[in-house]
Image 1 (cartoon, rainbow, N blue to C red):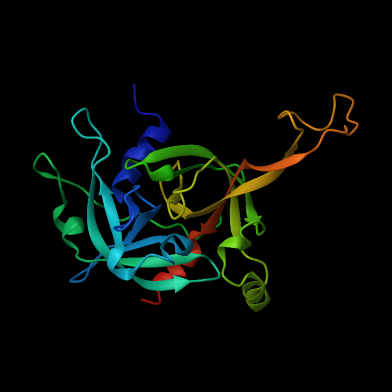
Image 2 (image 1 turned 135 degrees about the vertical axis):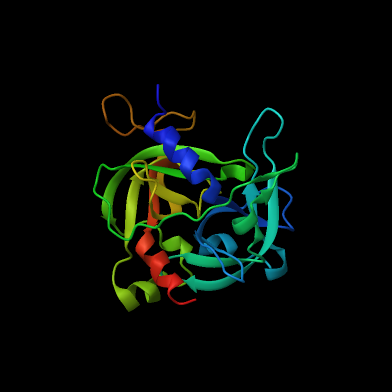
Length: 263
């Protein structure tokens, strides 16, 4: 019996997914990234979300290559330094250059000996169709191994809900009109930002994970809804909390390709 499409997609993409690390932060990866270009004499290039690396000191910025999980090794990362070489404020994107290219040409040293591969992902400039099966992989909540989530393209023409990651959203919107994002029906967490969103069918990266959608929910003083079963608002004091809506915003890969043209 062959592998399921999702298993095949994860197996193909795993070697292209990296963590984004702050050497001064002991709590694990701060975000995710994907290898989008191999280097020649210089290092390869990783795409991630700009808000992930914006406040990281240049001397502390690292990318991590996850060791393939096994009974003997799980949660191991091989890290090297990285440098921000291009940014796109409007689309919350950053390109990072690896400090060297050896891992792409010779493989990543395995803790137990030998090497494991690091490969370049393929970017898809064409807009996906609503309903296409996609996955998002990355390093949420400080985990040091790749976590994978599956869903569909909910809407390939979204633009709202992600302004809080842009330093000056009004100026950015005025400069170029509505922001262009895909809305994906996948639940992600802090740390997924910067990771690839890719089609299950052919593992082509359609975009970069940017943010999860939060909604405000109101509760009464005992943790229940302030509305009773009749739908009439009750008199209990209300408290508001933010909860995930399981909608994720993804920056289209065409903007990554455009940024690559600048370096």
